[in-house]
Length: 70
Image (cartoon, rainbow, N blue to C red; front, side, top):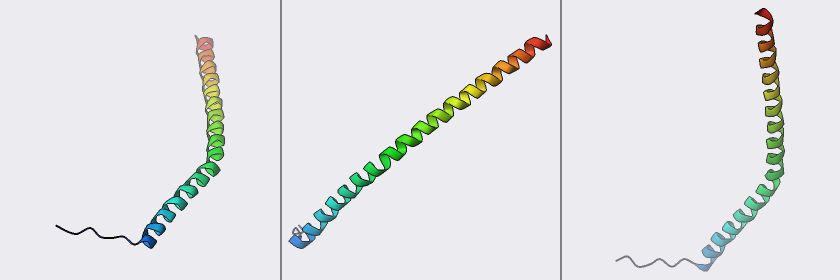
């Protein structure tokens, strides 16, 4: 059986410090990007609504053309 390896307290401190810094960095980055993503989603929804309106108008014009020709 292999004996367990003792990890020095300094290595443990460095590992937990890196973990804590990573968590803090991730939380700050998420807080920074969240409003940007919300604005992007809002703009995409507006653009989609505008495109759907244009498609609806084009379809109505096409139907009007067909009814005129008949």
